Picture 1: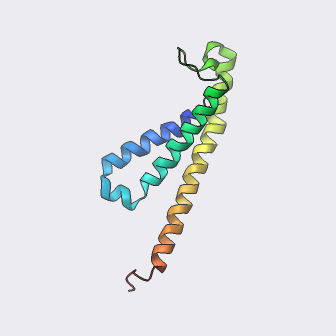
Picture 2 (picture 1 turned 180 degrees about the horizontal axis):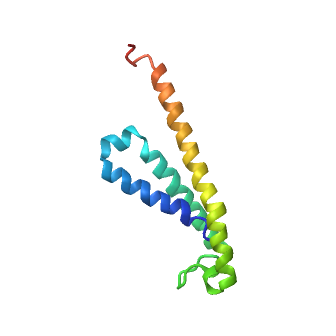
Length: 113
């Protein structure tokens, strides 16, 4: 229904954070990776929901908001599925950054102290 709004919201926050802290620090933290993963997942989920008729181009845009009973189910889905998806994407990004830092440490060009 609207689970894609949660990773999309995190994508907005990460994109704004990257702009606030500056390009150099954002690059060091690999925030672009996280942003790309979040926006890509959000786009795919939005397309899937459009395909199934859950998102439409006229207000209220989310068909679940037309009926109060469906709205409650939509909010539950956002809290459960959307949050889980956002957490899994963020966890995957964290593992990628950790593995990248290990790989950089093993690089022959890395300075040994």
